[in-house]
Image (cartoon, rainbow, N blue to C red; front, side):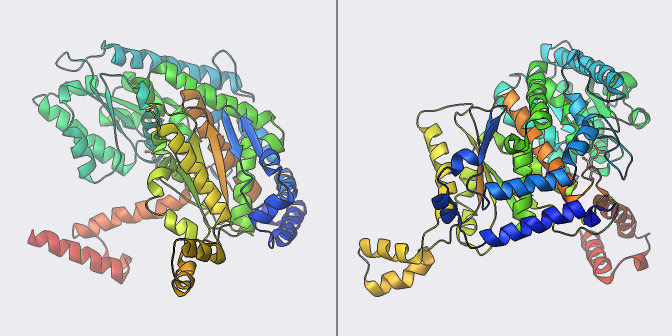
Length: 554
Ligand code: F6P
C-alpha cells in the first residue's frame, strides 16, 4: 500500500497535526513554565553523547505521538530488514548493509548472508590493515625508494566527504610523516594546488570511486597519473608503486592501469554516502592508523546496537529524527543547521549535507506516489563559533526560523587555558538566546538604563528586540575521540533512516543527480562545436556561445 494511503499512518499524522495546533499558542517559555522538568524528560544519553532537545517546540505528548507515527510506519520492521541485509533500497533492489562494515570481528551480522558478508568484510579489512601498516612504517616505498609522505585521496561525494571529515576531525592522531590531502573538485585548481605541495617520489594516490566512472574523479586521477609519470621520466611502471584504488568495479580499475593487487574492493550493498566504513576509509587507516579506524567503527557499532535495542523515548537516532520531522513536516520549517562548536568537526556539516539531502531530498514515496507532506530539510551549517560572527544575526532576528543542532565538546582535543569554558559558554548562550529572545519593552528599558532619551529608546527598541522561540538541540560529549566520532556519525545515519521510514521514502537511491551529469556530456560536445544546439534551451545555448567567444579571444 502506498505510504500516503496507509490509514494507520494518516491517523498518526492527523493526531500530530491536532496536537501541533494545541501547542501553537505556547511558546517555548510557556512550555518551560508549564513543565520545568523538561531538561530531564526531553533528553537522552548513549554512546558518549548527551542530547538535550528540551528547547525544541514540542512536549512529551508530541514525542509520544511522533513515536506512534514511527510505529505506524513500521520503523522496527524496516530497521530489522536493514540490519538483516534485505533489499531495503527498493528502487535499486539492493541491501543497505553499512552496519555490517562495523560489526565486531569474529561475530557475524544478522541475516541469511551474515556469515558470508562478515568473511568478505574481514578479508578486505585485513588487507587494509597490512597496506596501511606498510605505508605508515615506511615499508611501502615509491619509485625512488622513499617512504610515503603525502597521501592524496581522489574521490567525490561519498568517496571524499566521509574520509575527509574523519581525517580532519581526528588529525590530532595523524601520522607525523604523512600529510593527507583530499582532491574532489574537477576544477584543476584543486588538484594543482595539492600537487604543488607534494613530491612525486613520496606521494601515494588513493583513487576512491564506487563506480570508477565518475567524471570528476577519473579526470583528476588521469591528471595525477600524468604528473607522476612525467616526473618519473615517462616511466609508466611507477604507477604500480603510487596508485591504489578503492572500488566495486575491478575491470575499470584495471583499464585505468591499477593492477588488481592494488585494488581494495567493496560491494553494491554499501551506498556511497555510507561508505567511509568500507575500504573507502583507506585514507583514514593510513593517516590515523588501523587502531583509530577500528575505534571509529566500535563507536558506530555501539550506536547501531543502541538504535536496535533502546526504547523509542531513550533512542537517540529516533529522537533526533522525530524532532526533525516535527520541525519539517509539522512546523513547516524547511531548513536545519548543524553548528559544531568543536573545531575538529569543521567538515561535519558538509558531510551531513550529502547524508541528509541525498538520502531524503525526495518528492515521492517508495512506491512512486507523491509525498503527502513536506520531507527532507535543507541541511547546512559551519563552525558555530565563526557563524556567531557571520550569519547568526539572521538566525536571531530574521523572519525565517531555522532549527539548529549545537554540537558541543566539554573538552578540546588540544586544550589551552580559558578556551574550553568559552566554547561551552558561547554554545549554551546561543541556545538560550534563541529560545528567550528579548521583547521590545525589555530592549527599551535596557536602552533607558544606558542613558538614552525616551524617544531614542523607543525608536531603537524594535531593532534590538529578538523574537526568541527559536528551536535548538544541544548534543554534548566529553571529548572527540574516534569512538565518540563513530557514534556521532552513526547517530545521524540512523536519524536519516528513521526519518525516511516515517516519510515513506527510499533514502538509499539518488536518481536526482543523474540528469545534470547527462546534460554535461552533451554540453561538452556543444562547447567543442560539435553538439546539437537545438537539444538545449536558448539561455544555455547563449551561455555556451559566450564561453566559446571568450575562449576564442584568449
Ligand atoms: O553523483 C552522486 C554520487 O553518485 C554519490 O552518490 C556518490 O557518493 C558520488 O557520486 C561518487 O560516486 P563514486 O564513488 O561512484 O565515484
